[in-house]
Amino acid sequence: MKNRSEKLPGAETLTMPGRRRVISGLGAGAIAALVGGCTGVKLAPRAVDDSMAPRIGATWTYGYRSDWSAVAPRTLTYTVIAVDSQGIQDRLAQPDSPGSGGERLFTSAWEIAARPLTNLMVHEFSPYLLAFGDVPIGERVNVAMPPVEYGTTWTTTARAVGTEKVTVAAGTFDAMRIEILGTRLFVSGQMDSTADPVRLYATAWLAPAVKRSVRFTFQTQAARLNLLSRDHYELQRYQAG
Image 1 (cartoon, helix red, strand yellow):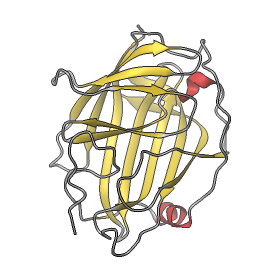
Image 2 (image 1 turned 90 degrees about the vertical axis):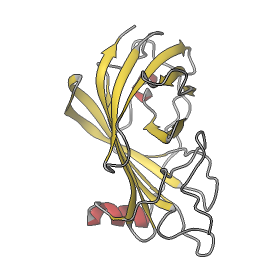
Image 3 (image 1 turned 60 degrees about the vertical axis):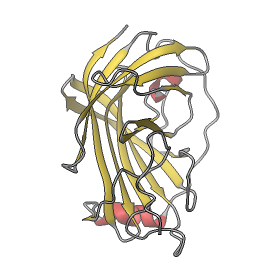
Image 4 (image 1 turned 180 degrees about the vertical axis):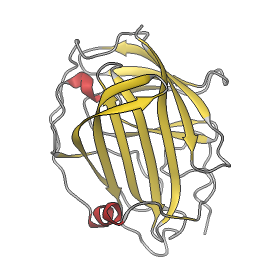
């Protein structure tokens, strides 16, 4: 079988460079939730709330790290380049790698974004969601996923569980905690049971004070329950623009 976890830079996928055969760190409850799957509601599109939206030129700097020692830490910056009633567009870059990254428009849709850098796929969950008005607490919402290149499609939902204090390098913030669960069917003969992701568990903390996420964790599992990725993103600096 072709090693599909070795991807060319720029491919939108939910795998990482190299296969990881590490026993899962998920708790039994989280695994049960993922395996069982959930259905959610689809929210109607919403316009940007100007009072909650960042300004053009606002910049956030994040530290990225993986639990795998072979994956080097990164510094990532996001800069808002456009804001209108329908969405917020930003640019992703690495300070030590000029020209890397790309631009992306975020609307009120709940989604997982996959943004390619050299030898790294950056994932994030609707980082400007608070700019589109109040987030429903406790309601499970359908989450759009990046297109799959192989195998079955994902079923992913998210639920806002409330506000909690989060401390990162940039400070301590009151942040909305949103938990994301995803699963897809494993098909024998078409997918690799140790290398193709079929479960996803992520958590995003969105802070009104900085108008974006302050922390995001993202991990995937294969059908054999070995962990394929465990990534952490934390806010280091914020400039309002």
